Image (cartoon, rainbow, N blue to C red; front, side, top):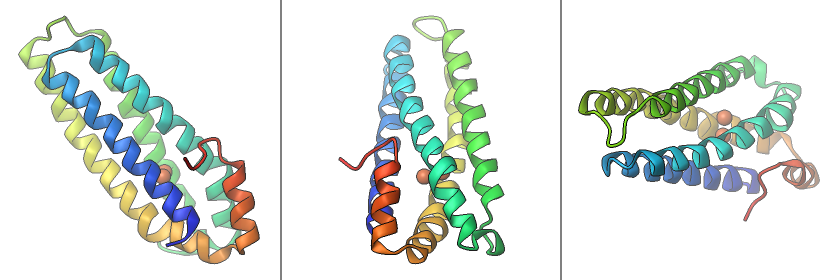
Length: 155
Ligand SMILES: [Fe+2]
Ligand SMILES: [Fe+2]
């Protein structure tokens, strides 16, 4: 696995973990903790998507990514949907009583099931197409330079 893939997949795991912590707080009916955990998740996701949009996807397009079955617009469209879901979650949480009403809580969890499905598809598309194809387009030096530009640095 390339350093790029390794870094990005580690980040995706961290994002899943933050979402899990958020949902755990929902199961505990702790609305304040759920809101904090959601903000934590959103923060990393926003930076990661910005890195992809600014540095990863343009380089992939330059290397011919748009001529494949995974063109840049697919990734951008999924990022847009991810942002819309996260906004909806924040609005739903802000409107939630503490402790939350059963119906509201279940509505949010249902919405998040759809979101997790979107994330899963996005993860697979990046894991199987974007990251390996981009890594194959880059020299070791280019890869180092690209990794150096990212806002979210390998830990
Ligand atoms: Fe990603
Ligand atoms: Fe992405």
